[in-house]
Image 1 (cartoon, one colour):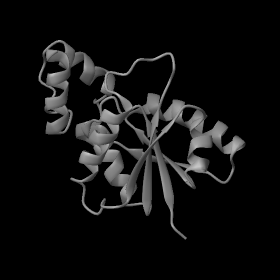
Image 2 (tube, helix red, strand yellow):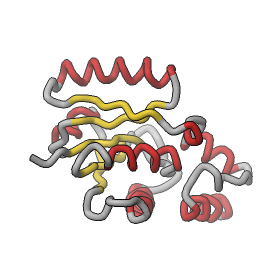
Image 3 (cartoon, helix red, strand yellow):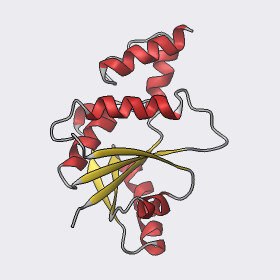
Length: 164
């Protein structure tokens, strides 16, 4: 049986923190479906297609990721999207205790709605714990150097995005 994990997020943009969790996920499951959540009330910096391309480029740099990462969009409940993707686990990264408390609530509710889908928490590595896509966007928008927080190709795309 192929073990499929669902890794949800906005990935706007994908960061080194996301890369850290994706690499950890690939060590646990046979295939990872990266679910890009869309919200009608939010306008992302990068389009869905741009985020798909960035995730693909990142996956191409990870060991043993070839053919094991796919990307999909979803706009409803994460647990429903995970089920539709054939996942048996939802993969969530944890940076700190605040993340843990919130994610435990989500995991409990998701487990009640879809008991066959479990949540696995992956702790962020120490060097990626402070990274959030929101802070990366803010730093880049103000002309700061984000190269320590995102892959090089993402840093270039952020520079291009804010130069225009």
